[in-house]
Image (cartoon, rainbow, N blue to C red; front, side, top):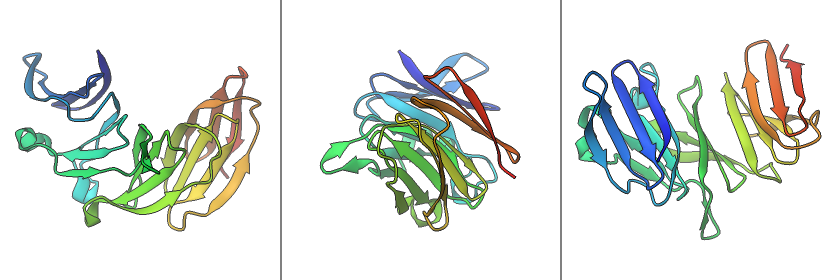
Length: 204
């Protein structure tokens, strides 16, 4: 089964439960290239970097159950993985990569089942340059706005960190149970979760 897709203009990539990545021909509706067992276990996150995102521009970024962030160029997909970084492996175990986001500064931000948020720099071959370990429960959602990363977890906590310093700027506990979804704009932060409530916070 297909677990994740990423699509921009003529580039469509899918990720499967068995760890396979497929680059599709959108016009013909057929696979162009396939890489079997790209990840060990399910592919859990998949995205295409914006065309204006510096060294990562247009790249396919995938995350898996193996805790690994992988980077491929869709123009030469058959060449395989350009970078493979196990950012979400801790104490010998792996935490599935739950989301991949891009910061305006050019950095790449990932969250994992290891309860960590990792920041990597494409200009340094996607090496990890920061690791945020403030959450005490499973991280369900994460979004990036300018130089701010906002994340939510199973204990109902919402945290906002400065991407430049890794410092926790503020913590919110408006929801009583797990916060599974968040949205961020220039003006508002929206959070919803298991308690059935949707809460809006001003970003001003």
